[in-house]
Length: 52
Image (cartoon, rainbow, N blue to C red; front, side, top):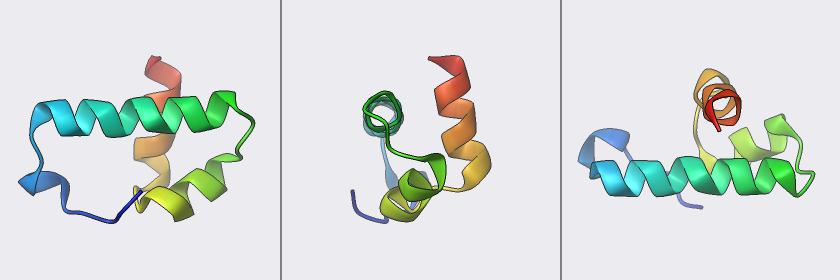
């Protein structure tokens, strides 16, 4: 995953990024590792996991 401003992404791109976060979490990746890899904030990662 690359760090990229969420403001410049389409809704589809943001949704795909969130799905990727959930996939990583379900594969056993720890939340803080996902935060580091994705460049997303902890609340964003946690929120994506909680919603899916």
